Length: 256
Picture 1 (cartoon, rainbow, N blue to C red):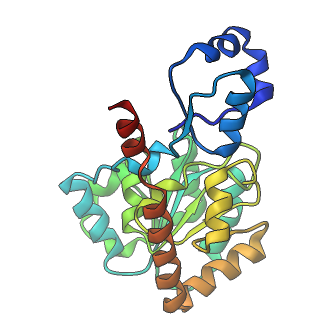
Picture 2: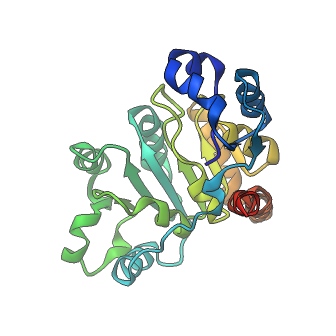
């Protein structure tokens, strides 16, 4: 991405701080960062935006894609990505209390013991991804728990609704651009204020922030019951993502 600079942080890095004055060009994420660099003494500063919006997210391999499609079985699917305990407290409560015939995919942020812990909590209707090959009838399971690294970003493509973890606690909100890339309505926790893209997407209308279980429940239920709202949020997501593209072009044009 273009640099996202904070003056207090740069002051701690004296060598970088003084060296910034000698760069031929510095590309920044936003106007605020541009002003920080200019205040240090480098006027050769250009706002390019976030390079992540120009990146492509790889698709799942055919085998993995087939497994996910068989599991979802053309039903509504909610993907919970990069979850921590604070997220899972409300997620697991919802799954266990809901009588909806929908599918859930949970990808915990740390996979050491967490997938098995979640599987044990949910019982017989859950299955680990590593055990998929042992089961021929995936339709009997309502929750798939990812116990590997590398699948999550592409999994959002299979969701009807995406929940991105980290915001219910203090670990830090995880990557919300991945579900946005696939134009999926996004739900996050309450601690998102330091993340520019989350603030923008909430204002844009393609993301909902929740603070507790009741707000989580209401957000999920309203999205499941209102197809027009799902479509509206998806369109807003596409519009937002497309509008933010172009950082690579700006940099390349400047380097000519």
